[in-house]
Length: 524
Image (cartoon, rainbow, N blue to C red; front, side, top):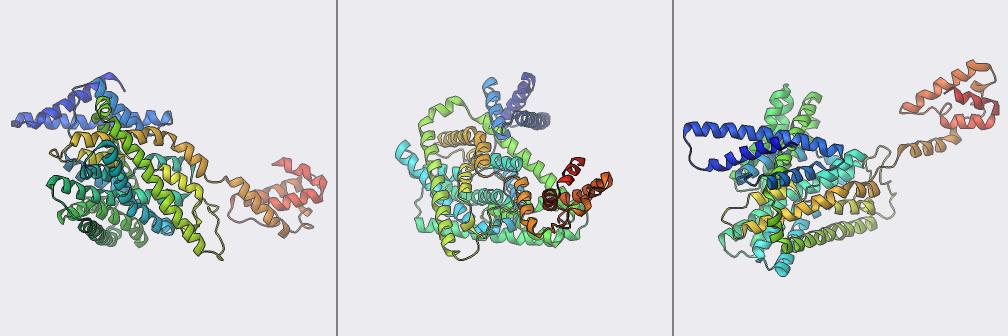
């Protein structure tokens, strides 16, 4: 990225920052033009930085934050003011809907209880532990400390998921981590909203009342999302025009969020459930292949833009000097984040795994991964212990935590400090966990190679191969016999079924039985 581009971004952002004052008609038009310029420059910067990050094998989220920090340090006038409405109403629905629409409920069902533990009690335990550490170690008031804990409860495993796709890791593990992130985004935001309202109003609320409010908001929001998702799933397949169907999906994502928000419920949870319903129930009802491909492409692009914009903004917002001022609270928050993650993964999932395994004694155990790479396990009892390490390391903090920090009310006590702590933890997890995600996934969650499986299958099929008949096509008739034996053997190698008489096992049997036939294999 050239200095000219950075200077252009700085100029546009400075103009946006100066646009807060009342403007005349001409000035308003110029401000709109500068906003468009800023948007185009940010999109261009995101594309170029992402391309460079892929070439050097670096998570693009890390590269975007680094670019934003460099831009903010080089051009000190650079200020990007993001209103809470822009973050919560424009960016989050896109991020949440795209992730939820991609969730395969069939792959999620075996781990649904474990995901619920991570995204329900796990969020409260994580937020509470961060609050405890910040209160005891950094002297932050309990309510404000819990606000930070709630912001950091939402995970963003984008770098880990990208690594999964690159290394072809088991689909069930990827779905489990994505679903946990999606659901704890919703529950974390509910906890965040309650905590901010308590801090802002300075009124005391009993834990029982807070818990009842939490459960009520989650349940009602999920019902709203299920209803809107069901209606959209019934309507979209009957439209017959993929452009209109994409438009209706946008209405579903943002309309569900705004409806839930107008009813004082969680728009994030409602949008999450609506996306899951459309992505599973809607597909079964008959969304055309063209519509599904269009929805996947459009929403992937929208989510990329939203994520890129958020990480660029957090890079602009982070100042090394401001992080240095809250270095001690950041250290406490990082320690609490890792400790809380260990408790909910190894404690909750580990205990559930033991209970499930004891309850399934006497039943035939299923392999951890099937031949196609998708997990066949019935429940958490069959969850490989190595996967727990990957789940633990996937607890990065990213776009949602950043968005919540940016959306803090301007009059909230210690707002800058709370934002600095959150940005510091997000930056730490990106620099440490995101950059080492490939090592962790490659060590504990890489899909087994296929060649050993095919050989094992061949050996298993070997006793069934008719040995005496196999050598006949390889009788010492010169070349014609050799060629005829080669061609039939090539088809089973790529087809779904293997003929017992001409498969690799039969060739091996033939080679052992008739030595002169061995040179015929060189014709391949």
